[in-house]
Length: 85
Image (cartoon, rainbow, N blue to C red; front, top):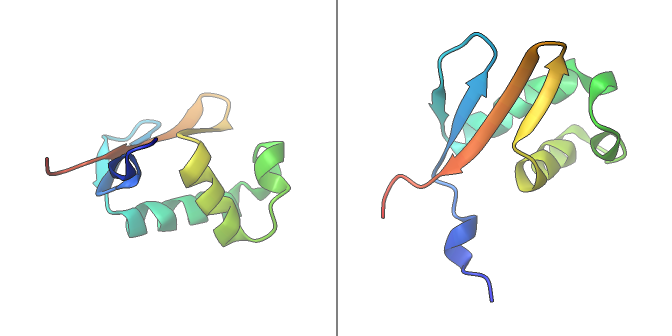
């Protein structure tokens, strides 16, 4: 049986091409991915494109992925972190 603590997401570490790492709240991470999904709508992976609606696409990415290749040599990576034990 899975431990429900595995699904707690206090914050995200965001790694982006040519930028220092950032710590984002879940709401900030959702907003960041929302911008990316809108900007790169035609270049998203096929499984993401098949989902209807930007919010649903963002939630799918948060639930199933941790990286997007945006263009040659450009990437976006995110990782869930717990801030307290």
